[in-house]
Image (cartoon, rainbow, N blue to C red; front, side):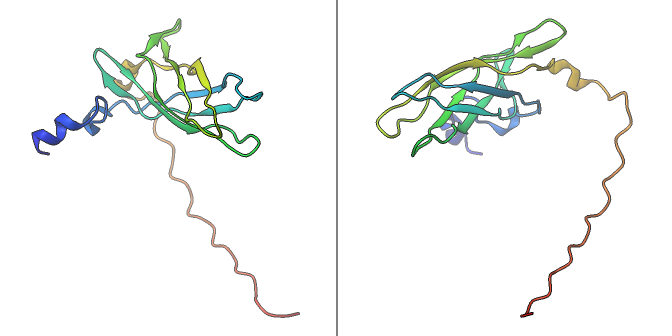
Length: 144
């Protein structure tokens, strides 16, 4: 890739920094605007290097309410260690502006294992492969 292309990319957009494959789940509500709020739930994108830590992208649609929904496209905080060897991330931001308003969102992700665990060999053997898919029977067409 030409150096000029790499310079134009936003931080965290390089594919080479996606070696940590873990993700987090999140489930929260927006603040109230125009007498309603939206549910925001999903899974973060893969971890991306950020200094001595990592961050995740959250890009989801909110739940549908009335006649609209909103986009939420934000980055989490760097990892915050938790007791037990895991970590979470804080996130916050504003949804897209739709139907004359937007909503604020702020919460944390669920816990994920410490990233250093990915460097270790698994203790258990891999699971056997899944059986081949069952062939679907096509219904007969025609009049009865």
